[in-house]
Amino acid sequence: MFEVSASRVAEESGWRITHTLLFLAFSAGTAIEAYVYSLPYIAETWTRFPRAIVALFTVWSPLWLLLGGLIVGPLSDRVGRKRTFYVTTTLYVVGAVLLVFASNYQSILVSLSLLLFSAGGEYHNILVATHELMPRGNRSTSIFLVVNFTNLGGIVAAALSMAGYTSPHTQRIILGVTLVLLVAAVFTVRTRTPESIMWLEAKGRSVQAKLELEKYYGQTSAPRGEDASKGVVEVPIWFRVVTGSVLGWAYTAGFSLVVLALGPYFFPELTDEFIVVAGVTAFLSGFLGLAADRLSRKGMLLSSSLATFATACIFLPTQGVWLARPQLFWLIFIPLSAFVNVFFLAEDALKSEFWPTGKRGLYTAIVRTASLGGSIPILLYASTLPITQYFYLGLAVFAAGVTASAAWYRYGVETGKKRSANIWANQTMSS
Image (cartoon, rainbow, N blue to C red; front, side, top):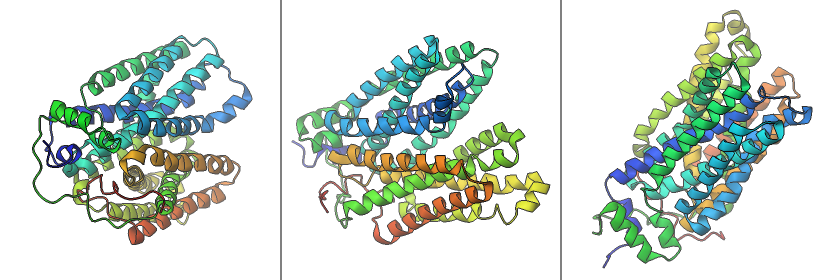
């Protein structure tokens, strides 16, 4: 007989082979999401698309990611994190195979839509499941490092695309077959890991939760020490939704407006270099996550958002200097890429953790839909602006991120420093 819940026993356990497998599967999963995200931009060279479709390509990726998360979020609350993974994996394989054999722009669009929908859903599922499956003492580090692997996916896709640049047909085959192999590898690993024990208990399936604990953790004894899920002040649901939505929107729109676009606008001949440097810098900065379990989540959010805004503000006043000496542009661009990535890791962790387990999929989907959906009109509007107004719009978006971070720092709850993911378990969602 268990003296405490199976979820608490699992959460207090030390790091095991199960957690290593989960980390590998989830890290590969976020890299695949970024890989798929880049495909519509690569696909523009494969065939002649109608003018209207080409215009939509700027928002094609965030639109289908949004839809994937919106559907998969509630589904994962209903059927479980692991079963939902089987759904997204199936769609991944269908989309990748269709991509390999696509013969016209219609079939290419269908395959890209399936892949992006799957990527949006599976990325969402990874965010939710990481909080619920990793040990409390390693939870923050795990989510930071897992999400950080998104920085590698786009680089891999670009490299493979360059390998097959002599023929659009060759590009499609290389990208599609590689994706099938990656998904197959992740599937093999994920089938050897458990369902979320927290989710099972939230759904009243305590017996199954105990069986999962025994099978994958080999542990049935109660942990020592105080229950880390107790003693949290309740935060109104509307405040959590608004905070999570604004933080995600500030990253998505701000990163797209400033980090991705500013360098190529002034130095178009260096576009590829900017993309690679931004990706590598972001990935390296993400290893700050190794210290994430010892750091305040609120503090990281506020400091990274302030650093991002302050660094971005340097660009316009110094424009005459770095236009004359382009090497000075890199001295601003590189730290900006690092700061915005740390902000991304912190906000992605927060907006997927501060919900009761039984509704974590749904509410994470709501805030991700709001942030991704809200970025689409901003990006479309920005494309009509001259560069100065465009840049000030980007600064305003980053300023909104600072405001939301400051509000959470003042009125929110600390979720870092090895806090339990179950601190919200007994809170109502009607506040």
